[in-house]
Image (cartoon, rainbow, N blue to C red; front, side, top):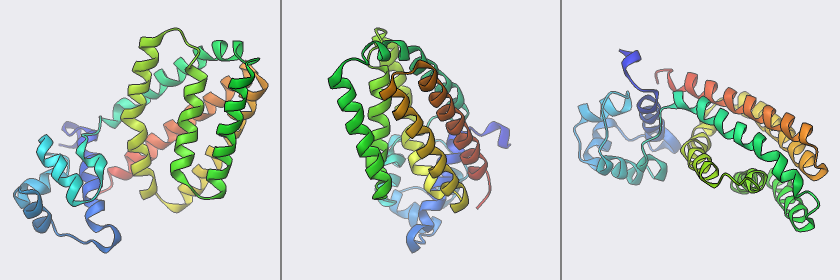
Length: 229
């Protein structure tokens, strides 16, 4: 039966189950079902990735569990590796244009400002600023691309999985989070340094490190989501 259940539905249900128990909320299935306006049996099917959700049900779950992302039905996580590969291939192909603008002092000043924001976000344990700096840096790398439709498509693909990563990753084991934090800081520092240096080889290597780490996140999140709670 598991093979017939999309991993997107499975993960959505796993998040609902985890969120019911988060911060001692401890809402029972029946209580949440009553709040959302569905039967307990239907909610049970949602939590185990069996039932389809209407937009209205998703919206009510997001409100009652205080998690806005639940209003959006997540894409199937099995599609993430392909999306990630497409994103990073496009970024690597955009590096040449980025380097052409390396002598642009305004661009370099912007990269330095983003780098400062990124470093301070780690110092201050500010995940929102860290995510913002990350997105700003990758946007700068691709900004020189003349393939506007592709750039826009890649951006929309990013929206499909970045928010999902940010939601799910905090639920993972502390040991993995510590390891991931250190690796993330390392390859982003490499990327900032390479961008400021204007080295195609180093930027490409840092982006490939980033892709490898993101693929590991997908694998870890998927394995965690499929463990029954």
